[in-house]
Amino acid sequence: MSKALSLWFACSSIFVLGAAAISMSYNGWLALLLGVLAIFNIGWGFMIKAKKNRLNGPEAE
Image 1 (spheres, rainbow, N blue to C red):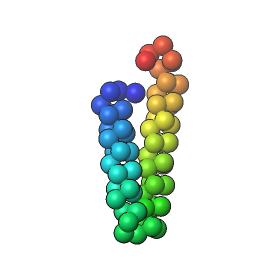
Image 2: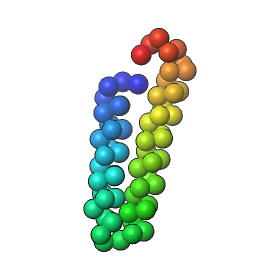
Image 3: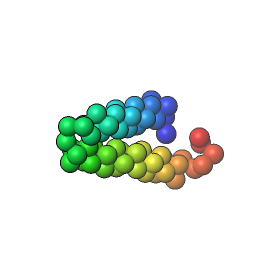
């Protein structure tokens, strides 16, 4: 995975987790939704990394 794409997934996950932390005091359901969204975002990043490693081979990292 490229460094830019890794940075994108890291920053977007931190942003969504931060929004979930802030929304905890306002709305519990929104915080839960944002937490699940963050988990899916992190998982999506791992899936893209695995797919690129499978196509390029593990030595391409």
